[in-house]
Amino acid sequence: MQYFLENPIGTGPYMNPQITKIENIKIVTLSRNDKYWGKKPYFKKVQFYICDNQNIEQFMMKENFDLFVWFDLNFYLKYQNLKNYNKLSTAGLRTNFLILNCLDKKNDYISLQTNPLANELVRKAIYYTINTNEIVNKIFSDNATSANQLVSPFVIGFNPKIPKQTQNIEFAKRLLSSVNLSSGFSITFHYLIQDKIWEKIAILLQDYLKAINIDLKLIKVDESEFFKIRKEQNFSMIPFSLSSATGDALFIISTLIHTKIESWGYYNYSGFSDKQTDELIEKVNEEFDEQKRIALYQKIMELTMDKVPYIPLYWPNVIALCRKNLKWQIRSDERVYAFEMSY
Image (cartoon, rainbow, N blue to C red; front, side, top):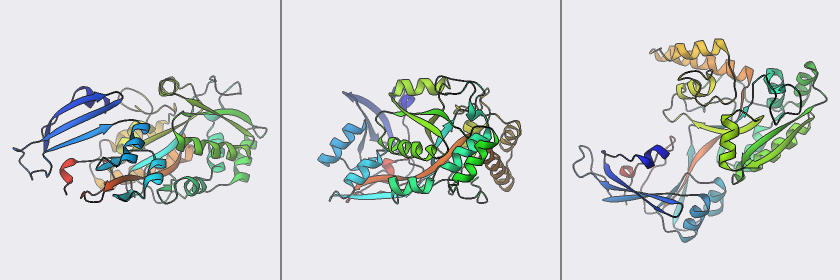
């Protein structure tokens, strides 16, 4: 998004993007391409406002926009009954999850001399302590689904054989006991100051982990600090979100699961590295047979969930508020095309 805002292009149904700024609001204005080879768009000109939550809420209160997308779920629930708008919600291609620091070294936010999260048995203990169904029911109602892997059921590569995540405190305690950590330890959870959804989740996580003697300290940080500790891998647990926008699992597994090396593992802030998984990812990257690709994807997902470098929590719905006289179909891939809209 930032690259586009600095280097705007557009030669399709809409073209000549112009970017202006009013305080902290960026406005992208697009004009209809009357020489476009396909169907002529309905609107001659469209504007996209890119702004923070505070501005979005003010706009919602004034009801002076045709469409609201990519905003906080709290606003959706608060303003879903606006008389001039339809609320739209559909299953998406995104997974929201926890990144666990798998590096075998101590950092500033771990109480022990070595990182307990480097041990997959400890990561599993944390995984089985969490109640993902309760998180979804308490916070999201019918606007999300509890997750058991890093891609949603609507993505090619989803593994239907992976069991649903279920809370099992006694099993988690046995896992910690097997590595002599039943007395517990302290770790931290960093999240953004303004993120009210993750704040609610963090409080639930803190309560879950108490059951296995893990003290989860909650730390609110601004964006610059959050991105800094993530890049430097100086954390124990942080939230993250990725979408398989193409509907295929390759993006997720190649950027998140593969060891961070050269062009691989761009989002692998966990430090997770597994030779077998890397080999399978590189193999599927060169495989064109669809059924073989799916089989490889599902094996990769099975191996990853067995080692739990990430804890998938939920698959959020794509949500929007759309003015009642605007014709538009919400998309699972979160994309918003002006040429798909009309009155």
